[in-house]
Length: 276
Picture 1: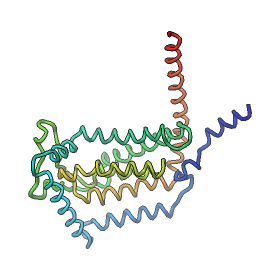
Picture 2: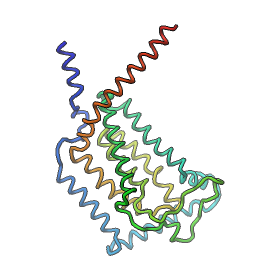
Picture 3: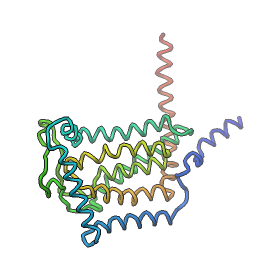
Picture 4: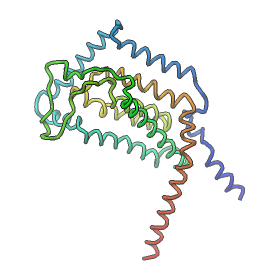
């Protein structure tokens, strides 16, 4: 009886040894470093910075190189056109969800409830951060996409018939795709470890490249905007107790949910067994 009680108690305790990057303490120095790095990156891109001409030159070169690759009709043009549609955006989001589900069932050796709590917090934090930034207009600049400002521009509208292809924007900085991708990587790395973080990292080109090829974003929308956003937002989750307390709060609902699913599973398959 005592062993069962101890096991239940252990299951409710946060497994710090399994999640070494989820901290209970405030790491002020690391937080300041992240904010300092983000400030330097943003400052280097502002109009008064002596580095800005180099950023602008990089923007132009990347645009002409990548957008020029779809100048001729062919499989690459069709693939890139599809990659700039809402359908592909949905598929990209589904790929991130698949990575989380794979971690939930095949991740580190701890209870499914704790992994589920970590995934739930990561998902909520990611969605709220990207969605609220966009809705509130935090950090946005009135910057037209390169497809509006530069010539020649090879527009992929009509490549897929009536399917809408996004290639232009009047407010393209920072890139929402880069914000989501660059934030997802450190959060998953902190939660699940290097192997899963590298799996998320492998998806970055898939998420951010199409908008560069299509002309919807400048390179600095991703390199400057996405990196600064990730530094500012991910640091609060990884270097403060925020992630820890989020997992603690979500662990109980995760236990309830798993108990309900287990009960339903048992009832359904028990009925099937009885009917045989």
